[in-house]
Length: 309
Image 1 (cartoon, rainbow, N blue to C red):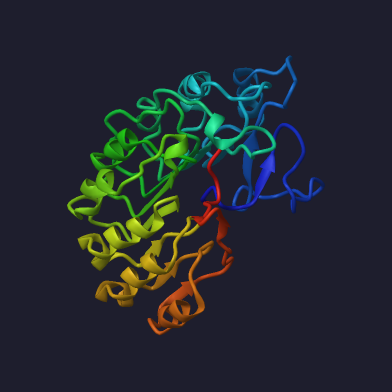
Image 2: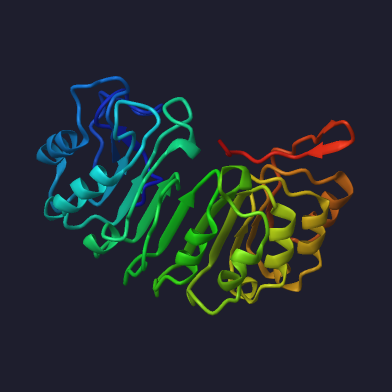
């Protein structure tokens, strides 16, 4: 069961589309636990304890963690990490975890502070899917996990140091790698140089999905990926949510390995009609929804990504 399945809220209002009167089975329901905004009486450790008293045990395989503090911004997830690790015996079969399911109404993505996550993943040896939102002060340290198949890091600005940690990770079963690169205005990279080790293709032999999303240098990223040995073994290349324009799209069109993909996701882009027609000739499953229009001010062209601040 993955964390992308139906979610029920443990604290606060149910998410849209969930019937609070229904009795969902654990096969189609993932719980989201969150501290209510401006509720000074709630703490995350107490909330987690209450949740696990009601729903913990071997049958709990997936968990979504929303806001862990009643204030905004969220300065650090250290208490969350410590609480989850301390309760690992109460959820021994956890296979999917999303840390930081927080929307802009609660806290901007760039305001979400974390800390040292190095002890978290090893505490759950059966974990197969891990997603985290926000990267301020985040470190994975030496990332090593025998069973992790999916790793996603959502950011408004992904630091080069974190990219290095991911590129050096020992994740022998990794199939899905999703990195939101963001913009240098919020700590992200402004050249593709930090992606060099990752794109060298020497790691992650089972990788079939690569997402380098939400990038303010999407054209340069596309050109670098087009030359990467990784491309030959991917099923899906996801460069969505960024500011990709004709230059990046043309680099992809010229790459022979792109034609072998099962899916090319370029959703949220700035590609012109003539180049879109060329992309459609690739005969891969193509997502080019949500085309944006450039803004021009004083002869300067501005193309925006989906999430930055």
